[in-house]
Image 1 (tube, rainbow, N blue to C red):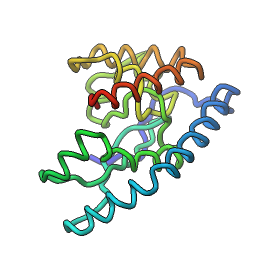
Image 2: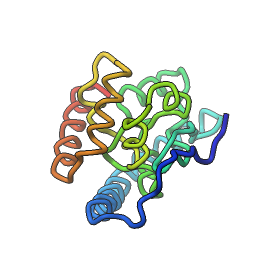
Image 3: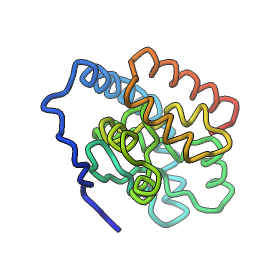
Amino acid sequence: MSLQTIDTGAAPRSSPTMRDMSKRGVDILLASAMSLLAAPVLASVAILLACAGGPVICGQERLGKGGRSFRRLRFNTRPTPIGRMLQHTALDELPVLFNVLRGDMSLVGPSAVTIDVFLAHYTGEAASAYLSVRPGVTGPWHVNVRPYEAARRVELDRLYAREHDLAGDMRLLVRTVALLAKGRS
């Protein structure tokens, strides 16, 4: 099922807050820098995948801020040694930086869930909190929920959306990089 928006029943905020604008500015700055630094890797992976045949980039429909759906980008990995290496190192996720630059996502935020997962698990305050911010490439769920527990992820997403700040986002980014360096994606 493909949806453009989900009616939340809540009135949209009339204008972005200073916190929203600061967060978006940091997202653009960091995602731009990361994209430039990763450009050789992005190009190399794209060439490898193109040589293997098939599409290089794929996307999965996710639910974003305000109930708008978007396609979360990633490299189209297949069950090959190269595909497994890209998934293990999280290099298959690099195209998601373009989602951040486009404004579909933030570097840090609630988990980017499918519409079906949202409808099944997010209700009441958790639903309105989730829809009030952009989903993140990483977030509290990424560094805190092991093994996966849907109820815990929903609660972390709700708390993040209500209480996030720039310093907390920076701490989550550092923790995510540390996890990736240890090989846990």
